[in-house]
Image (cartoon, rainbow, N blue to C red; front, side, top):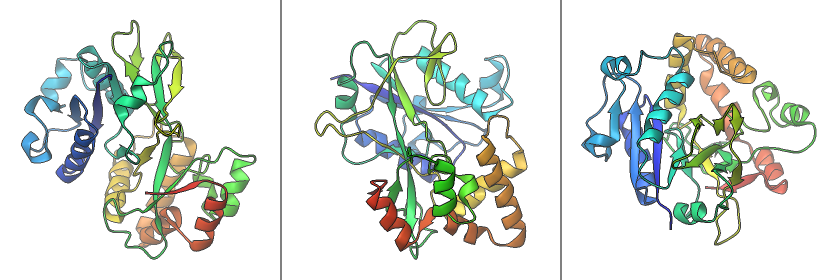
Length: 294
């Protein structure tokens, strides 16, 4: 069976790094590398990592690489290139700190089932959400996951399904719907990007991740909102930084709506509208095959 390493860039509390590390240890990753996008990183042992698995992206780190890129996306590409250049396993799985594999899928088996002619594999994203009435402050407390909507009239679907909030959704999700990926070791002229890897600015030939045991999709569960307080802190940080260079139009709308709601003290209500499904919403999504239990 092939082995794999996992890489993520993060600026997150130690408890979130520890949750990520524990998840991928249990998935039997050969190595986990978290590039910490700041100076004040926790002790590696505190988050369940070996010393060489937590890389602090401080001034010295960036000076050795020609300077710190201005946008978070360019910093991600830089650290992914660093991780790929020193990859010892068969595959490199590229994810964010809030993304984990759903269910009891054997990742090595998934990667082993990728056809030889495919250089990468895409793990489609689903988005963790709450049930209306649940405690929205409980971190990783979401009990449901919504799939992307690939049916007709996606904008109209979102407007009907999320009244007053549909303009924030793309294909039924608030965050990205492109998924994340793993790339084979040793490929020439490859740029490891955020959602896919490319050669000559063209995506590599990729398979869709499937569990060979069940034949079902191997989903990547995205905790776009780990909890209300974490979500609030994330958007406060983004709004203060003003880094929207590669943020999609609808994501920029979310940021503007958040800033307005925050100033009015209504951000908790906004969070509920976006991430807590009412019973009728749950029923419709289940009928459409777009809702899973976590």
